[in-house]
Image (cartoon, rainbow, N blue to C red; front, top):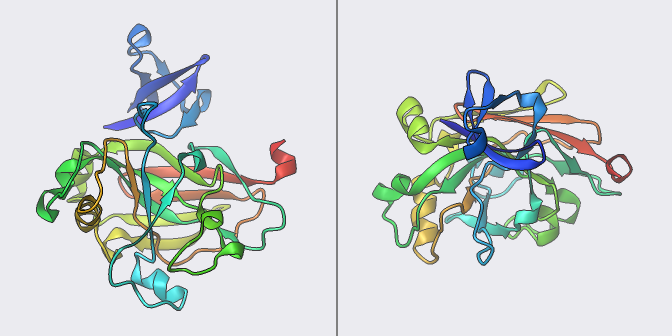
Length: 264
């Protein structure tokens, strides 16, 4: 099942995809259907308790072809960094390209949403801790990159620079229909032109490995995210560009680049 989180009629609602529309799950409106174009799409993630910030873990150089594209040796263990939740924005939203930036590129990534508390999880059991999957576009401000092995905060923690969605697809759907998360085609288009293609099977560290690795030294909570890296084919994006990051069986995430003047 495909789950969404939307703003409609002055309120936030959980919804599911049903026959090409959104069926609301709000008790007073349960079953009410609205069109995709009638709503504001929000990140399709369960709300967190106010006392606990969401942990967002992201991977660098997790595809061998991307590491080669950047002339770097593939890492021997997961190269991870943390992201702030303020960077998340929804499907069909806009992402701000900062003034003076010379190179800002998309990164189409499979995002894993943790479904239950995970601590010292064995790799063989890791997928049992996944609630579902969504698409993330983890933009990078390459101008301020100091070291690919240690991406600094200004590269990956800009507000609006991590679109995510449109759906949270149940883990069972991906596991049953596609044999799991490790054989999904990825594609990015910019203004309708294909600029990136890849497959999750080419990850250096697969999803079960990542869950086992992180949970060995930290507790993962429901709603936490793991962004699993991107294949090669990243290109600079300019204001006005419409970027669509797609993952087989998960969804097509649409995002538009804007400038500070346009977004005012």
